[in-house]
Image 1 (cartoon, helix red, strand yellow):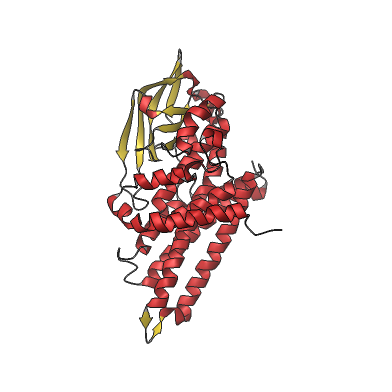
Image 2: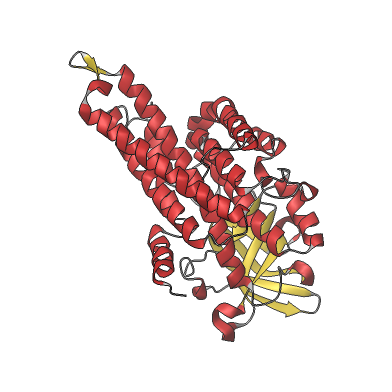
Length: 382
């Protein structure tokens, strides 16, 4: 058993770490305050291969594996969680299904510009009544000659207000339940009848746009379908499994940032004639944070290694997402406590980290759903 990273993995991790420290950490507070990501930062992320890490180079990506993806995304999220989730969606929720289920022609047309960082993608799954339960989906797609007609509204779509392309799930056969769901890949700029709906005001990750996608008799080409009709639900589950590794990595980056801030502050803050790092109460908080962070990283790297080697990773991805996001929430709450009044102030970044951490327990499968996934695997249920 070898726990060491390859030289290539160390290199890409260090490159991402340097980028996060130099390009993202200095702007993270402003990104949060203005609710706007940095176009320049995204462009540079694309140039570095971060927007399509595991996509082959012939389709615009960096041609690396999912371990590299997890390592890079952790560092990007440590610098700025908003840019981390934009990267995550491009790679996982959009990039994964287009590459995995798309034709060669679809890969060239829809993967290349997003994986190279020229454009952003998004994933149109969630609706007002269809989040954890996709069977509640109301968006429909009806075949009309050489076109599909889309009608419906998607909610809480990350990158929805900036994306040029989208993978959209819709019901193509109402009588078949889950087996009547189909996925499509859509050029939103060329989709008459599509509009961006409400852009959400959020607690955290404020620099990443979250919006509605509204389709009103929106006509898309017949060849927009990903795979065969009715395979959308299976595609969806596999996509979300892969996406959970990304969200776990985002959570890990947030937790690492919280630990860094806590350590630095505890060494500088003096009370009763000593830095607060000298007090056991502080030391125990830091020890617990560090232990859970290391455990989270091991779970993430295991899941990423399994995916890279084309092995089953559903349970491991759910474990990693659940544990890492709970760790991020706990670590950021403790960081605020360690910093005291300063922790509650926007003068220091830990209050932002706490707000950013919360969503990792919710999206791409709530942690309650993650426990369902894990328990079903443990019990041998299908």
